Amino acid sequence: MRNAIIAAILASVVCGIIGTYIVVKKIVFISGGISHASFGGVGLGYLIGINPLITAIPFAVLSAVSVGIINRKTKINEDAIIGVIWSVGMALGLIFISLKQGYAPDLFSYLFGSILTVTHSDLILMSILDVIIITIVYLFYKEFLSISFDEEFSTVVGVPTNALYLLLLSMVALSIIVLIRVAGIILVLALLTMPILISRQFIHDNLRNLMVSSSIISAILVIIGLLVSYTLDLIPGATIVLILSIAFIFAFLIKKYIPNLS
Amino acid sequence: MDHTNETEMVLELKDVQASFDDNIVLDNVNLSVKKNDFLAIIGPNGGGKTTLLKIILGLLKPDKGTIKVFGKNPEKGRSLIGYLPQYSLFDRDFPINVFDVVLTARYNRVFKRYSDEDKNIVTNALKSVGMFDYRDRQIGNLSGGELQRVLLARALARRPELLILDEPTVSIDMKAQNSFYELLLKIKETMTIIIVTHDIGVIYPYIDKIACLNQKIYYHGPKEKGLHKIEEMYRMPVELILHDIPHRFLGEHE
Image (cartoon, rainbow over all chains, first blue to last red; front, side):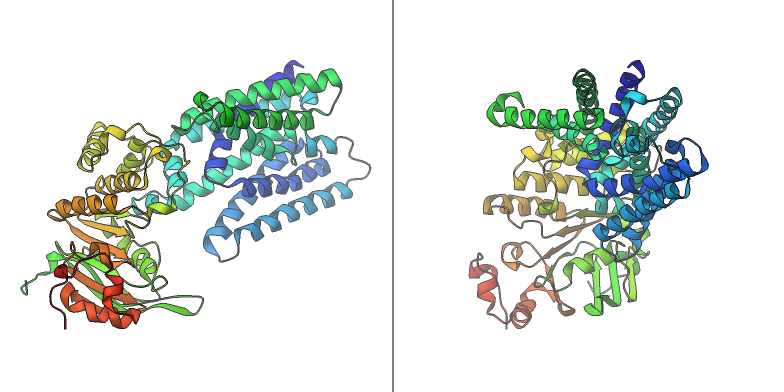
């Protein structure tokens, strides 16, 4: 349980930071594509017998960078590219797993999360990724803000927008790796969007406040979800997502009917 | 006015051609803008105005032709351009306040923080458009006219020598439009201005020159002589286009 709570906090920090960019820059579905593509890496981890989270990193980052490059350099529709990497990644993962003899017992946990079985080495990996993400966002905060708000203007004033867009997508990829243990490949989008949508009902003034408040909201709700799932013996990943969505509905109603709060 | 030398040439396009998927958008466009011109590029929607702007700003490459911005290629010359995009394209819910929007114009390079001087420049730019008191407001809490002024401040915070405005007063009410153009009249004293619009009516009293663009440049010169060209381009009488302007503003046109 202690590991689970640490994992919840590590996950919530990146949810708040990267989720904020995902929501304000409207790259939710690119993120979904990257997440599903990383399943290829999970499968490879099974096949060669190392921690699937580690093999998922290059898959997630490579798919993020390729979506970004194809998106910028060709005329292929963005949503079509997302569809392609989404399914190709999943297909690769399935092939890798089928090449390995026998049934993959905890495959389910990578698809839907399994925060109660987070290991010590998972926590170390998650911490390293947290540090990388926070450092990069700290160093490139003004660039990420600029390209999220107005990419065209940023290009004109000399921001290297294409390179920074790829860097931002790579950070999305790393944050997905951090979240896989908590919510699983299929459910991570909930963690990357709902805490931000909740806090956005009340926080509008700047990106940094939105990040901090989203991280705190995420930590509280994930831990509540964890405790609820533990008490009622429900699947944790799915329970967390439901708690998040209930909180979102409440936040929306509070904003709507008690306008003074915002 | 005829003895212009090279240094007074702000913008020069020669035989520029651009196309999208085999459709020619700009055909053999020639345009030259001199220092302190106040030029309106007028043309119907879909006439290539936005494409032309993007080429000047170095965001698009033309198929053919050369572009000189202050005698350099657009990627280099654009550091002297203040650019004001259409405000209606902005996400008004974006969590950013007025001051930070304008501050993005002071970008220098990676790993370099905004300096106190940058912040002073932003303060002055906001004061010059009368928006300094709104500096802490999130942009969603501004009217269309106010946001447009903020974006003008952002363009001015570049300390530009050329100001380019894309449809600056679309869907802004009449009163805000007029005060916006009064503001431009002041700015005009210190820099070259290009306005791109499909609506010549409101801006006509303020500008000096017109370029009529619909794939080709139909006319480029003093505004009074351009009116009949606009009629030709739009295939309707100029009175309909100049709907808001009393005739005394129009001057002579043959």
